[in-house]
Length: 243
Image (cartoon, rainbow, N blue to C red; front, side, top):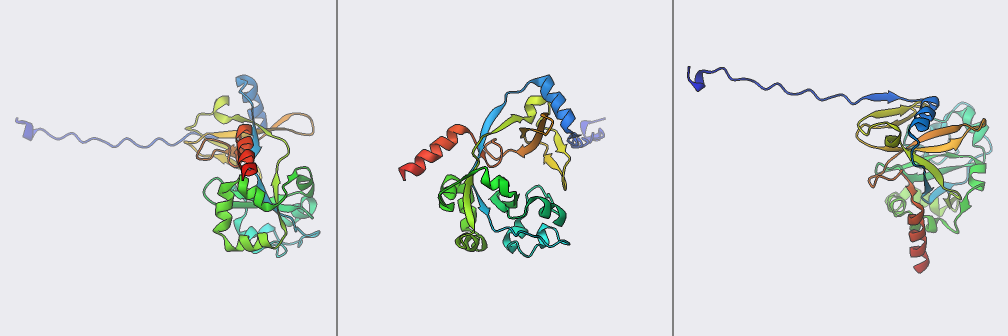
C-alpha cells in the first residue's frame, strides 16, 4: 500500500477548557487570607465627581433608574456592577446624599449613590476642574458627553478625593488563580472577577471588628480600577501645582 493509499488520520480539535468558577463568601475569604498572609497595599481613590442634589424624599414605588428627581443621564449610566437601588434603600440611606461619577474601568462611565455622610467625611476639592485635572480619563469622557457637561455647569457637581487610603490585597495572592472566575455574592449580580484577569480585595471592618472584603477589578495597567498608588497621587498633585 502506498502512502497515498493510507487512510488519512484526522486531528480532532481540542475542546476549549471552561474556566473554573468559584463562589466565595466573607468567611472563605477570611480563611484564605489567614492561610496565605498576603501583602497589604495602600491605594488612593482617584479624584471623582459627585452630583450633590439628591432629594430629601424619593418616590416610594420606584428604583433609582425611575426616580425623576435624579437626572436622566445619571440614571442611564448606573453602576458598572449592575447593583440596583430600591426606593426603600434610597429613602433609608441616600436622602440628601449624592451620586458619584467616575470611569467604570471598561472604557465607559458609571454613576452610583453615596450617602450624605460619605460626602462629608471626604475632601472636597476647590472645584470640579481640579478633580478632572487629576483624573484625565474622567476628564476625557466628560468632554465627550454633552449631557454631563451641562450637569457640571449647573453648579451642583463637586470634585472629591478620599481622605484616607484603602487597604487592598490581590486575589491571586490568596490562592485564586488568574485563570479562575471568582464571584462574591451581593446586591444585584454581586461582584465578579472574570477569568483571565486579576483583581483586588478592599479590606475593611464590620461592626463586630471582623475583616470584610469587597472586590475591585483591575484596569489595563493592573491597578485597581479608579485607584492610584500613593506615589502616583503625589506626582499628579505636583504636576497640577506646576501648571
